[in-house]
Length: 412
Image 1: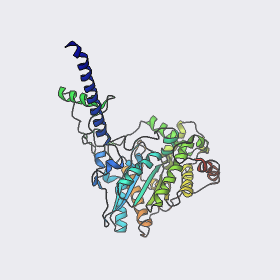
Image 2: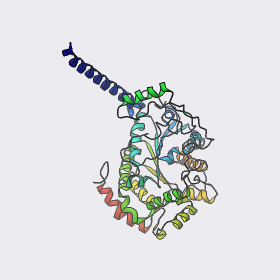
Image 3: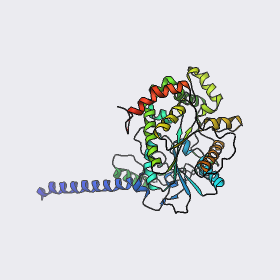
Image 4: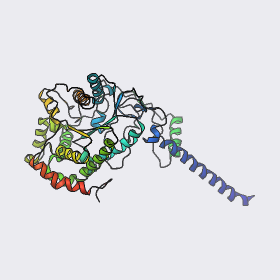
């Protein structure tokens, strides 16, 4: 009898181990189904973007021949916006383009905070394959996108929709969301067991209901004066020619992104790249505060430098895409008393979203639908132009990168 104890114990241990391994595999497979990928987006005819905490509504994956002209819109937090769905520049642009052209237009907001060029590529690969569409708009944030790559503020390989998908509340309304079992342990089996324990012990508390009056969402995050100015000062590196060597990886990523944009346009999709200025580029009082606080050679700043270099990259690498620069229009709006940026949040206000949305809607109606341009003294100057200095920087800094930039990843 005793001689059978050890084999029996080993058999029990092996059975338990096998059971845990199988359970772990099943749970990990189940978790993986929530990842944003072509497969996860094609399990039904509807892509429920709102359920994934995007600032967008659920959309049909396919399009009827008589369906809306659909534009997929990508970018970082400027694209996600700090306003609720109906107040975003995407929604405003769709309404404006439809009103001008008489067509049904749909903008799908796929913006995600804390992303940059590499994430835009991956996001389009996922959503572009899953959602039938006619056109694409990419919003490049001239404050963050180059720095996010160059200064490693955002890792190159972060997953699509990693940030808000697991939040316990809806970022637009504050409503509670069921986000499943949180990750706490190395084994998912232990995560599930811990969740059962918390549930049985009564230690799980319901998510508090939140409220945020329209038009703003829970994406609003006003910074303190010190943090706001420090943030603005760091972003001035984009416009300082002496900082160009430090931004090399950011420009390499921009070149790789431009190549990708050219590939999209080569398939027959209409593509628009929007160069969006940061707060200091539009509001002179913000720039004055930064320069008054931090030691920096103001004479070395060209607030159009990154726009000049990026527009040159797209001209040479992605000639099939259209590129527009919003600084002239937003500066014009500021002179009219329009507050396009929200206090110390750094993003476009509801007023800014309305202004930018109307501009984009009118641009789409004119350039994609052939509608006569709408008279507007703040629209029309869409390019940053060039200077002798910017031409020199392009020839000495950008052109060598055009030759040496790898197809993917950073320069070795």
